[in-house]
Image 1: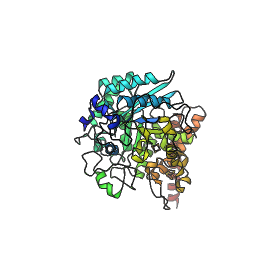
Image 2: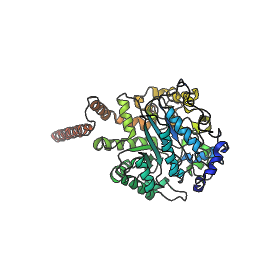
Image 3: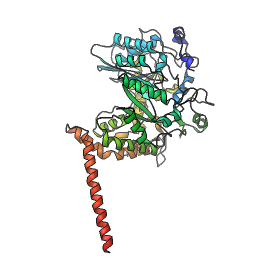
Image 4: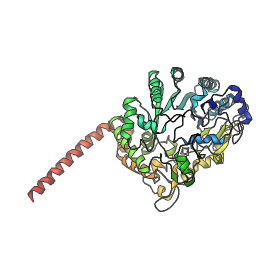
Length: 473
Ligand code: SF4
Ligand code: SF4
């Protein structure tokens, strides 16, 4: 598998028209040009998650259903060719009305493209960037290939690196394995240390699954105390399957797995690796309680930031908690554009950036409808929910169970989210109040500690009174 990704440039030329993907390949870089006027319905700013190696990765993480997407491009070399790279950089810059653009790389494993590819990307950003435009380069990696050269490059060009790690050794190695089935903890830890040493800005991305979901404190403290991480994102593993696909899926999504199905958003069951709804809620609550008492202003967790934005009625930065979505699309190695990173499947193909400009595809009724459906398909149970303002039914990809009264379309993780959002109501109100008054949100830690001391004192006094009363009678 890994050798498939070490293709020469002559292999890349096969990609132009011959990759066998759903819509062929991107052509020259001069076309398509940016539409003369901003297409009606196109968002002012958008986000593209580019996958230069498609689904190809040097690891075989058992829960990574994206590995199965190789099946969408039979015979492809899975290497983004230079003309597609140039189209991507040019169009994503042209698709921003504001002065900021993010050039985002994800996988598969993007570092398999080699450093040259990213040097070229940086060069193209300089070529097409508008004066005074701020550019953020981001890359999500499993870390295994990172070395001094990569870290120097990331530091010099201000890349924000997302490092995938699932907690201490046992929890990480349970599913994050290499092609030989061996755990990858040591290599990832080395990468984390190297990134720190080279002062590269990096975030932790931790998936929450059957093996680590019952250990929120161990996982969180490991990142905070042992890796010194100050930005941690937790993502629930929910691998959706049907009765027929479950057995094959439980074996993992790697090419060697028997009966590997193509992962699509279908089915009402989940694999045995998936996190349970209540477990997810308990995990979030436990991490939140630790964070809100000790780490506010020091450690950033997107879920908590997103919740605070909802409590303060500010615009939502996480699509899963927004009312609608549809402004974050996924770009395959050959220029095919899909509605979302989680919907890289034939029904959600919007076109190819070699044939249609990104802006035009973002403006299509197909894509706008995709984004609106997040709001329009909510079951009544969600419409009546007291925490809908913060949850908004989370991501549609997880809405595959029935509500208590039998309506379809409820989020599988509902119970967990409901418990979490109810639990954080009071601290969020305090945090919101502090921010509105221009105070330091970190004051919440002292406020909660004092309140807890007072209520502990009150409880002690009450129990003493009860004991005295019992003795009397
Ligand atoms: S489908 Fe889910 S992940 Fe994709 S854009 Fe919508 S909310 Fe975000
Ligand atoms: S907590 Fe449950 S009921 Fe409430 S909005 Fe979220 S998914 Fe819907």
